[in-house]
Amino acid sequence: MAEKGTHNLNRRMSDKRRRSGKYIYKPVMKKTCCPQYAIRCEALKFQPTKSQKKVLRRMYNYLAWGKGEERIRSTTVAARMNGQSSDSDLQDALDDDDDSASTSDEMEVEGAGGAEEMPHVEEPPSDTHPENIVVNSDNIPSIGHLPAPVPISSSSLTQPIVVTQRNHVPPAKGKGPDPNKPLQRKAKEVRREKKAQKLLRQGVNPTPPKSSKSTSNSLETYLEKPLPDEPKHHLEFRLISTSDNDRDSEFTRTFDDVFQVYAKYELTIHKKDADHPTPKQFSRFLAESPLQRQLAPEQADNDEGVYGSFHLHYVLDGKIIGVDVVDVLPDCLTSVYFFYDPDYSYLSLGTYSVLREMYMVRQLHTRFPSIQFASLGFYVHSCAKMHYKATFQPSFLLCPETYTWHPLPACLPKLSVTGYQRLARPEIPDEEGRVCEYVNQTLILFKRNLMTFELYRITLQRSVQPAAVVLRKEVERVTGYALLVGRQCAPTMALYCDNAPIHQPSS
View 1 (cartoon, rainbow, N blue to C red):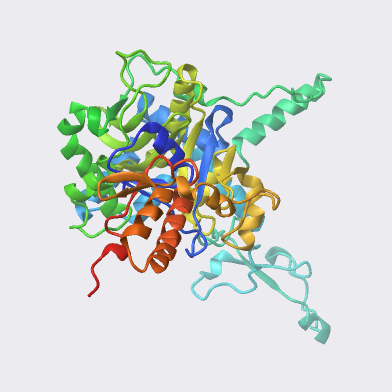
View 2 (view 1 turned 45 degrees about the vertical axis):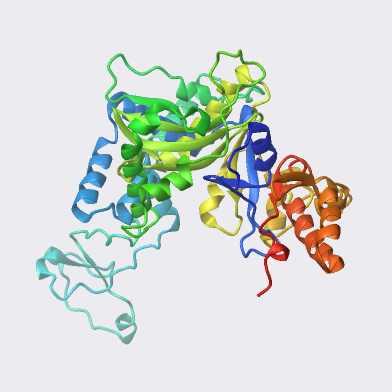
């Protein structure tokens, strides 16, 4: 647990650990069933994918024209009737497409490709009226031109007489497309085909070579696109400092509103008990931070410090609908937690918040060049809910043994074999093998005196008996601690040793 810490300390800790309130923790990778790898994205090179662009367009269309308001209202009604939004409502909201016509076409085309053909009906249903039934046979003429009776041979009895129903009955839902109708296609495909045919008639190649220059729209293209003069909704972002040495007054004023959003999120999304989210638990988890607000080297003394812990409020039409808990460090922006009002699940606020973090890193980088990465927390390959983090590229995973970063796509084949993997090459020395190089410089706080571990061992030899047994236990304990915090942090943060087991009176 860290009571206070500078941004440099937290930066050195952030690569291998996560923060929960004032607690900084690191999973024991080799012992846990689901190894958690630190993941970060190089925000300066990030380009949104097709699905991420869809989220950005959905948000813009909602703010500009109010498109999708009915989805949010229907979810709100369900939340009020049932006390919380149903899983189906939330899933429908997340899966909803901006273009309903396009979605409909995609569904029909997909069904056409994998549908079974309707079986040929050889007998009419028992309740079919006789007037609606005709007999189709090439050997049977029409009723107005019946010839004389012809003797029936045994061979004619073996020929099937096919009976079909005149009034067509469409197939039941889920049984595939109607075989008597042409396959439906996307309107976009039809337009492209017509345009290609027109160009061919004019003697122009309809498929010119693609330009080497990328035509994909950047993140700024979507987030900086101006809204109409009178947009339907207004979304505002407020960055609130939560660091103890410079806590914003807005934090206290909006605390109750923020907690209500958090409680609703925990109850609906994570199915927590009704009495579990409490203001005290929320404060301990997301409001308290050991990170002090500090100035960057590029800032003047009278500026507000850019480094520290913050709450980024998503304020829609004056109402807080989401809060992103972030830490701004000298080289990255790290996301601690994000929660939102489940009534607005249609807007895919979870994905949108990560895109906003990428944009925020780029904005900070223009003034503070050392800030280049967006830390996405931990990546757990065995957890399907974590796979969305792999869609933000280029991303890198931290090797749990060498603490070096490696491209995520190159790591995935290894993680598919076993959960715990050494991601670095074999010739790179691991941290555990080098811990003896810095364990003696580890800081110890013993009886209100700050000393190195080397001096601490000398103190124990003079004051504790039997010294050999005590020293062996303390060397194991402090070495394990030094390995957890790492080479950079061991000499700069102190291990409290007054409550060590060897100092407790024997029973």
